[in-house]
Amino acid sequence: MKNKKENKQIKIIDKISDKAIKQVEIESSGNRRIYYEWFRYVELVSKDLRKYLN
View 1 (tube, helix red, strand yellow):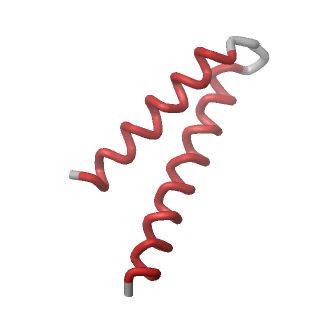
View 2 (tube, rainbow, N blue to C red):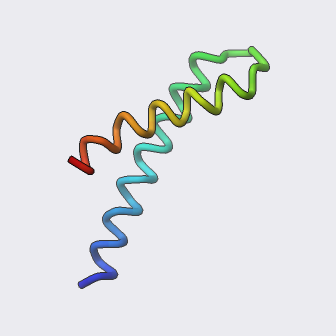
C-alpha cells in the first residue's frame, strides 16, 4: 500500500515539475538568466504542490 501511495506522489511531483519547466522555458525564451529561471521554477512547483499538501 505504501508503494502505491509513493508512486502516486512521484507522478504528481513529476507532472508539476514538467509543467513548471515548460512555463520557465516559455518565459525565458532565449534569455540566459539561470538563477532567475531556477527561482521561477521553484516558485511554480511550490505553488502547485500547495494544492496537494493542504
